[in-house]
Structure formats: structure tokens, C-alpha cells
Length: 256
Ligand code: DGL
Image 1 (cartoon, rainbow, N blue to C red):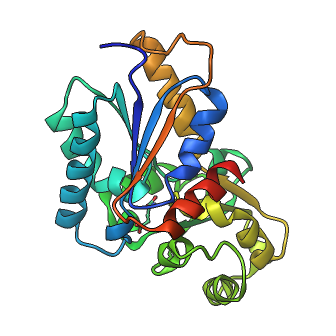
Image 2: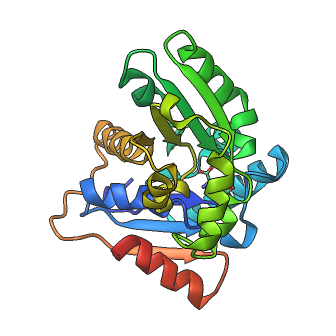
């Protein structure tokens, strides 16, 4: 396998671009093909079977184009689709993402941590066993956020709609008792500033995108597949929804 082949990245829509941003920061010379499945968004309220089917089909599209590694830049698709993909392609580099619970728990002694994620992610054994690992060290509160990816896909990174969604979501909590918020869905880092603003009090916010980018680099290095070219790599953005609005949002998220 050639080291200058692109890295494939898949997500249920635009959220995975938050992972691509981190990959570009630490490996700007790699080539990337990103596939966002905005036409089928959201995944987080679909059935396990449907998300597995979509994840495998999206990955196959990129395998057919020739990628040296696959990053599943979606917590939901990782939780349900990664085991199937790994069983189908046991010799390939496949990187998943999970809610960044570990750094949030380790950042303080006995913190109270709110984990925002999709309903499907929070129902899976993968998340339940992650949570179990840390229950002695932290008070962990899972917070499903149905409807949030749809608002983000529509380009609501700030503004009244997202503000009132977050206001309703956060209303039941005594904010002075929460130490950290984990963004357990790759769409949420796209509205990190709005989340901090709506929370309105000091809180540490964690997400898994940086760790996922570092893990990808480590696996490529181990496999001797890091691109040695010195110039900036090529970024190809594909989406199942052929719309100007999506193209505009992709550029805004990646390049500001
Ligand atoms: N971006 C996906 C994740 O990280 C979820 C969005 C969706 O529900 O499609 O879980």
C-alpha cells in the first residue's frame, strides 16, 4: 500500500469535519477524502441495523476510491458500525471515536461530568461499559440530545433556534454542580462556543477529535504509512446531499 494514498473519513453529515480539522492540524501533508452522509442525517435516532448498513456502505465507497485508512468520525457510527467494519476488513487501519470521558474524569478529583451524545450512542454497550469504567471516580450524567444534529446540519451554529434548544436541554441542571461537559457527538464541537455561552458558567468542555487525530497518526506511523511529502495534501469533500448550502457550510467549518 502506498503512503500517499488518502485517508478516508466518514460521518453522518458535517460533524466529522470537526475531526478532519484536527487531522489537518497535525498532518497537513496527508491527502483526505471526507464523505458526509447529510442525506441520511441524523443517525443517532435510527435503528442499529440501519446505522450499520449506512456505515458499511459509506466506508465501501471510500475503499473503492482507494484509501489507506478509515476514520469513522462519528460516535454513533463507531458505537454500532465499527465492529462490523473491523470484522469485514480485519487487515485495514480503522479508527473510531468515542466520547472523551477519560480526560474529563481524570481532569479533576471526583468530578460531575455531563455527557452530551446521541440517544443511540448512549444506549450502546460500548458507552455503558466506558461509563462503568469510571463510575467510582466520577458522577457521570448521560444527556441524549435528539434533534441537535439536524439544527447544526441546517447551519444553526448560533442564533435563536439553537439557543432555545440548549436552554431547554440545560434547564434541569444545577450548573454549579457540573464540572465538565463531554461533547460525545462530532457535530457538537461545531457549536462549542454556543454551548459554552448557553451554559453561562465556568465549565470544562471536552471532545474526542484531537485524540482521534493523534491516534490516527500513531497507527499510520506504526504501519509505516505516514505520507512523507512535504507539501500540503489534497482535501476532497464528498456529501450524499448535493446542495450549495452544504458546500458553503463545509468551507465555513473547515476554513472559517
Ligand atoms: N456525528 C454523529 C456522532 O458523532 C451524530 C449525528 C447524527 O445523529 O447523525 O455521533
